Amino acid sequence: MRVRVFTAAAAALALLLTGCSGGGDSDGGPIRLRFQSLAWQKESVDANKELVKEWNAAHPDVQVDYVQGSWDSVHDQLLTSFEGGEAPDIIHDASDDLADFAYGGYLADLRTLLPERLKADIPARSWQTTTFGEGVYGVPFLQEPRVIMANKKILESTGVRIPTPDKPWSWEEFRQITRELTATMGKGRYAVAWPLKEPVSVSLNLGLSAGGELFHRESDGRVTIGFTEEDGVVPGTIHDQVNTDLSASRSTLGTGGSDALPGFFGGKYAMVPLGFSYRQQITQQAPEGFEWIVLPAPAGKDGLAQGVSPQTLSIAEDSPYKQEAARFLDFFLQPENMVRLARGDWMLPTGTAALADPSLRTAKDGWATGAAVAEHLQPAPAQSVRGYPEWKDKVATPAYQEYYSGAIDTEELRKRLVEDGNLVLARYQRR
Image (cartoon, rainbow, N blue to C red; front, side, top):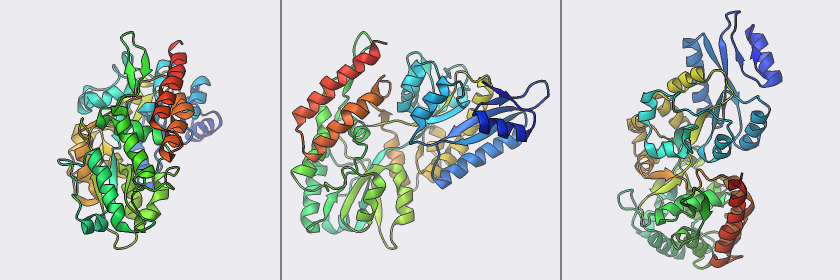
């Protein structure tokens, strides 16, 4: 259901009561688009709201209403709104959440809606993350590589080789260095803490560097799971650091990234692998005098490759104002605006023009390291796999958690991921 706009007050009331988009009609009122944003950090929310304000000031005939969403509940909330016919016109999400919505017909195919400028500015590898079947169902605009936040004083005092994007550590070297560091740090202190509350994306995305793919598309288009030696490199390294070398803290395995920061600041952990945006929390929370550096994640046979699921902007299929929504996306994702969004979220833009901005290439706060790693980002392995959310929640998450804790071995991990996982995927591919 859509509501008509007669006055600003009526529009606000209608949006509050129904959650539906509104549009101008014979009364000459403006078209109104609802933009549901998942920005949550203050700098990011401010950047989003400022851009919406600038658009509205310049486009009195097409007004955008900012609606605050939440990453914690977005999938279920969107599914409910789609099925109820009350979806926002413009939808902020992540590419690994789009497959079921795209195949379900809830998102508009953007191929004929977007301007050539925007299409050309974003690399093909990023567009692959939002391509499902023959259509493109989202604009990938922000991306977050995984990096290692390191205590500069601890690393320099031990004399270990400091990796760079040009000369990263291998996974084998990383394991050896964490053994050596732990031996020098003293009892109760560890070279590395792995916050693995969400172990699946970490395992799969970093696994690409070692050649791991896990998901394989057959000649008939069906996707199956196969656990190879390459798929075991990254999980095996983490497992052995925790259970064999005792160089990684067991207590952080079930925690989120923020939970590991106090121990990092206190010198309990020399390194913490985290998403790039955690730099903001470090700059805000680190005690005075704490020196930290950003290191690239270890490299495997495929170099610094790692999977990424960019943040995306989509248009609802049932929006009557797709052309107007696409015009807003073109404005919102101009290179200079993409830089503002990236800096607000402490992430990296997908656009090549924005990524070349000098402010994203400075050594301060590790921006340059992240920008160098961004050139190696690939679509996450599970990007277009139908049934991935169920596989992740019901099969992969508990399997990886038990493996990393030492409760099961590699063979049991393989069995669960492959046998149980293929049963889940087969059910979706019969639909």
